[in-house]
Length: 392
Image: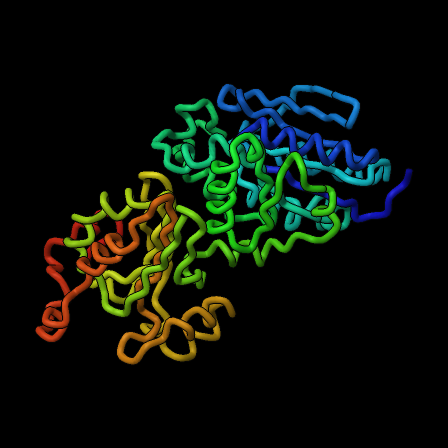
């Protein structure tokens, strides 16, 4: 069999190895001309990486990989991409499956497969990324999204300085692709339905399918759009639904136009973050009125970081310098007096008490009296100053 360039590639990612491997097995069995490549990074912090290549009949090759620097990015650049390009040149396989390692986020691999230059040519000369699929185990999904474990503690670190949490990695793996393959849902119908609801609400753009029952090969005929996936995940531009409820899984998006008081928000953080499995979005802090702040929480871990200025704080000409997605989001958020400054944070959880959560968040806002008095906040004592810099 000879296939034309660019060759078709499907990326299968996921924190749960059994679910991921079963999904790859289904693809291999469905296409006799498919081959799968997996890099075992379990000993990468010791400088050791092993490459495993297999087809529907079993292992074809298992070899150690010599790298200048042992890291996930180096493995991609120095071994995976050259290998895939060589395989594509031979034209011997109809589908090239990349099975990622547990702790690798699919965005890293997907963008390498579409944006890298190999031997002076864009990698897209050889490869077409047809699909990105994240496989998830039903019996571990909710527990891992609420976990306090870090990746290193589970032996899943992909670098010596990997300080990511299990919940953070799993959330990123779920929110990036356009297909989510749920494994083991049939063992318990209630658990399966709950997991499907969690996945659908964390990534409304993705098809949620069964590893055991769905024809996964049908997902590999298109072309994955990395730009659209990146825009979907950008909390500075996302426009999530206001409310969604499927069984006991709920999502609520808190939208307000007044700024938050830094001290009151800081005091409420534990309760706010702990209320849901996942929360993300953009927010406006009274002590930093010109800075768009990103909120990114998974499990019990919260990351807050600046993402540039609100467009309302810039001259009109600056609008031409930002992305179409950013301009569209600013236009949708726009209100008289505040411009695009707003609170837009989406929360997803099992048994989420939305009324209590919204009330708690509302209590963090500056009151009308505080705004009228010109007291934006007590800027002399800003608990976020160490993270964001001095108050404005």
